[in-house]
Image (cartoon, rainbow, N blue to C red; front, top):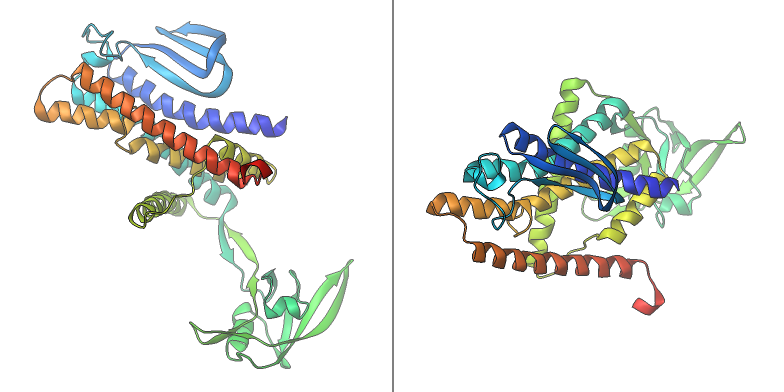
Length: 350
């Protein structure tokens, strides 16, 4: 029940925020909004407020906004209708949705570093993680072990311990560590032979330090959230660009994959859920910027053409573009869903 609730909340939040962007700019520009629906399908309950029907529907995943006269076939050209607006006003309305998704992503990134902090490696000589298959694991070292000395030399910081290990590739070293077992501190000597890192020409044993959360102030949190927003956008575009150039199939997550991810993260805690909402909202916003018909970016592209050529949109051209866009989006949906199913390792799918 908890997992299902988390899935509904995450999907609804990122989509409703998206639609809220369209709604707010419509109201700002004087466009009448006939309906704001949370969910799809049959209306369970709703109410009228300031000329808009606020509807809560049977399928609580997502939602939509219906401005008056949003279809070329139904518009009368009235000033309070969508197509009664100039092309650049319609662009503003279309862009508002993905922009709001970016605002949500930025807000989540800000909350993460402001309230929980930014991951920062500790300088304490305490093992945070042990890499499988490396000398540290072979020697019996464990997460939480505190390094007291190496080759008889006391160490007080992670930096001191790392320096000695790096200087002894493929040479046996003795590590004195302190381990807490059932509340009792025990000292143990582990014989380790650091593996040589061929790229850096140093010794490594496969351990990493503890990670501490370092809280940031308001301005630093704003800067960090901005950097993360840009980082994940560039990383996504670079990944898709490399896949196209190298003619590789990109790894995509469809509805099944996203539900699976939300289900797993919901068990980890509220902090992890906030981070996931940021990434999903950013991905939705970025995807809607793409100039694909039916998406916001596709609408923006058509309205730009209208502004450049100073001619109203041709109904046949718009209808054809929408069919092409729908076909493309359906193909992406099928491709992503097939990848979701293949990742489930179902016998009949292999």
